[in-house]
Amino acid sequence: MQDPLNIQENVSLKQYTTFRVGGAARFFTDISGADSLKLAIRFAQERQLPYFILGRGSNVVFSDAGFDGLVIRIVSKSSFHFSENSCEVFAGSSLSALARESIHRGLSGIHLLSGIPGTTGGAVYMNAGAYGQEIADCIREVRSFDPETETTVSRSREECEFGYRRSVFQKNKEIILSAILEFQNGDPEVLKEEAAKVMKERKEKQPLEFPNAGSAFKRPAAGFPGALIEAAGLKGFTVGGAQVSEKHANFIINTGNASAQDIYDLSEQIIQKVRAHSGITLEREIIFTGKF
Ligand SMILES: Cc1cc2nc3c(=O)[nH]c(=O)nc-3n(C[C@H](O)[C@H](O)[C@H](O)COP(=O)(O)OP(=O)(O)OC[C@H]3O[C@@H](n4cnc5c(N)ncnc54)[C@H](O)[C@@H]3O)c2cc1C
Image 1 (cartoon, helix red, strand yellow):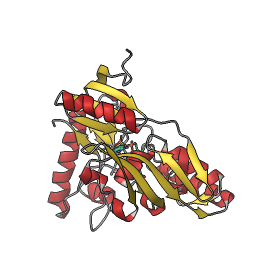
Image 2 (spheres, rainbow, N blue to C red):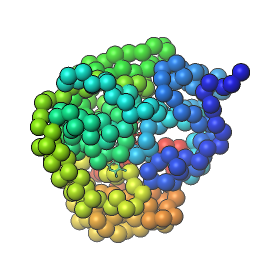
Image 3 (cartoon, rainbow, N blue to C red):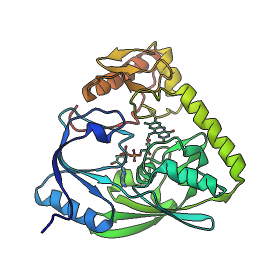
């Protein structure tokens, strides 16, 4: 019988993260629904291996040693089920594509998030946001899979415990399957114009020509990471092939041949030097996975 999970072995993770670094996954599989997700988790549990849930890999760095377990990539075609002002969206769907579709339909709420290159599941997990919008603002309900009970759970927005780049899923390890979003009515032309403006700003201010994972550090209680890093004299600072972007100091870029360790070591140096300079301890936004 054909393996319904299509588990692959020794799969390079470089191709699955936007930083284009990292070693191989011992096992790797693509999943698009709760049934295959359950089987994948059982596969890992039976072998007493850890598993890691991956979206588009736009906020993740795997170590150069790779992941000695099962990487479960959540994929689903970007198909959205709109009904008047709401939309059911599957976790593997592209957030950008969803934002574009909402603009097209004259629905306001996430139109400024169209430059975020992740999945909708990854966005819910991170509570991704930009230019004053956060995905949490539009969430009515999130459906997730609880690996302990092997059941699906429905949570209201309040039950998702959203905060700045925070959600309950970072604590409870449930896997996001889908979400229902609710929008406000808007003028498609205005929404399009506003979205185009922020896309232009991203292109001008962010080093999109190099592999990266977006903002390297979260906003601290006071100040902005980019300004703090710049003030510590770190613009252009390099460790191996990893560099503090000259264009935007809160971006670490892979100049071509960075290792995952270079990126981690650079982030560590930034934390130490910013703390020494300003007394503020930056917290990483990028998720480093494995041994560093
Ligand atoms: C050029 C660029 C610009 C960016 N700009 C922004 C920005 O403006 N604002 C912003 O907030 N972020 C930004 N990011 C970061 C990133 O795109 C977001 O954090 C995004 O939401 C991550 O989604 P992903 O699918 O890539 O998740 P991944 O990077 O694959 O995973 C991130 C975390 O989510 C977990 N996860 C993913 N899917 C699921 C799921 N279905 N269930 C449970 N857990 C899951 C993973 O285990 C991991 O811990 C940017 C990144 C890049 C490269």
